Image (tube, rainbow, N blue to C red; front, side, top):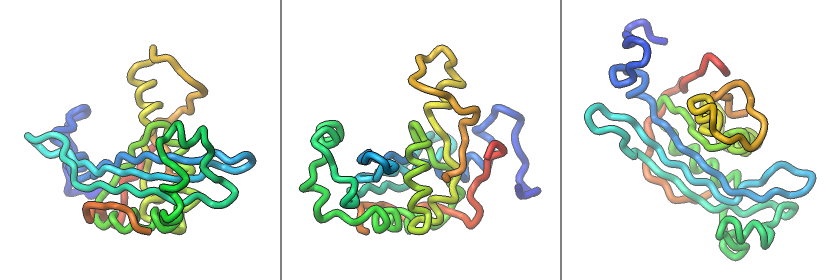
Length: 191
């Protein structure tokens, strides 16, 4: 951390320059789940937010793209019913590599922090495509499921709970941006 930045007392994010200088990218994937293979993405959506003094959360970018799945992972009727996405919608979509490279090109300043619900799935999809999206794959990821369980321990659980809320994140779409990004994304002490 830069020695010139003075940190506020613990628990006071409003005065924390690192908090205000970080762009939070909320990311979500839809995917297929082929037998014998990891989930394959068919849609990605990302919303970039910053917290600005006296204004609160402000959207600074957005990206969304459908993705054509590989032949071994077609969209099933059950997947179409669950997501509302049809095989016809995916027929001319970019590949996952193309779509994630386009998202990666939005990450031009920072620092960033990814936010995802059940982040191991999103992190896995990003990690398996890390050559196409190196900036995205290098950004720390907060899991909102684990965060909620830590903040509200009485929440019903739906499975096992890892010990950390922050993990390393192991073609044409629609984007607004570029988004703020620096050469050194934030790193967690838990990562």
